Length: 374
Ligand code: SF4
Image 1 (tube, rainbow, N blue to C red):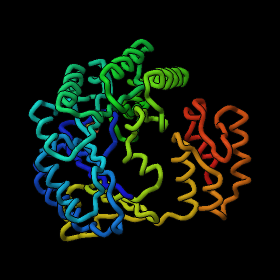
Image 2 (image 1 turned 90 degrees about the vertical axis):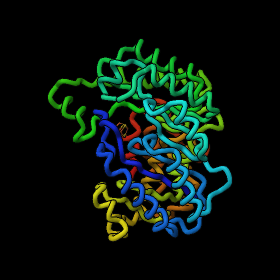
Image 3 (image 1 turned 180 degrees about the horizontal axis):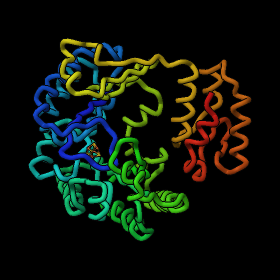
């Protein structure tokens, strides 16, 4: 099984924390769309006839793409790939783009999962991040989509915002749960190089919260969501039973995927590829073909490290039997020694051959996985 990711790079405005490859020049939408359809046909053999079980429209803001065009993209994918019956098809949506008309049009497509970038339930948090929607718009968007029959709705939230109070975070979580949605992705704010937030932090205008506040927010979120029937199946992802993101799980389980559009990444089981993060070069795809793509062949150590990193972040953990079978030249005794240290400190727990991060471990997952890497 495999997945397809489509990077729709257009946004109406830039959020201050975002370092994704996006552009605001909407005059490039028509040529981009033609190049995207061309790229689908160009890459038709990339997944070696593996059936496609998930398709994901991300970005950027793919809710700026007319649903009729979403349909045409899906039809083109069906024409060139084998797609399973009832694939999971997700689109990321900016709440500001949802009207009754949009929801009805979207319902005419095969999209069966929507992911709304709600991020916060206070207008001053949204303004701080330069989000273009308001809280009322987010509430209305979810109502409209639910009235249209969408029952697989995910929302994104951001915590660790400067000066966010405990009460604000608790109310944010409460409001999220009351929306009767099926999935929540919640990320701690990060200050990525080159973003507006990065500059504001460096010049002292934005002061990140202390680590104990971030830890409290993470623990509060995890307890609260688990008490409300959400399962934490990855450090930042919570889903109701049967509503986990199949697309993300495929990434974490190292299944192959094809990324289309500028800056999109692909994986064929052995190598990673990434399209150039440059729309003008991407638009020349018909003349340049593979020149728009770079490639990295993964070594056995790269694949081993990825298995550790993605496995430990998830509900399914890592399995020593899997390591001994798939990475026989890796020293599992050395790995177990380091794992043992973290079991003693309460950061990792064991169940038979399997190992998982504890809540305490999740909070410092990057440090732990870096120590386990070969
Ligand atoms: S809308 Fe999404 S992709 Fe666009 S700038 Fe904001 S966070 Fe980034």
